[in-house]
Length: 102
Image (cartoon, rainbow, N blue to C red):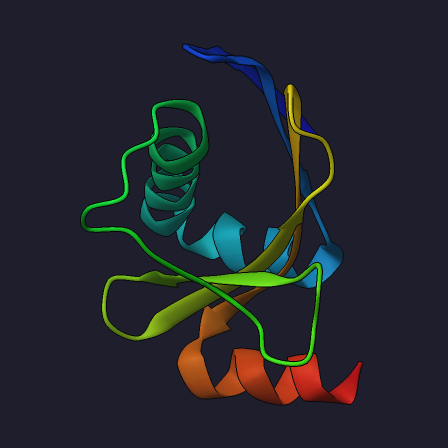
């Protein structure tokens, strides 16, 4: 679990599932990009240049596109204290296959 204090968000907290943690341990640059984009999107209201969409067929899961070929699937738990639960992270095709298996 990682906590940060940011602008309009009281606290921004990241909880990484095992597969996401494993992926980000090998791709620190993508983890930093993901966390920075989450902060910009939810705390500062920046929408331009950040590709976020709800997963079809799900009310809670959201996917973020990183660079060209990577996806992160996550959900937001609370509003004032933003808790980001990260389910999966990885190459585009692999993430969607794992998501469908859940």
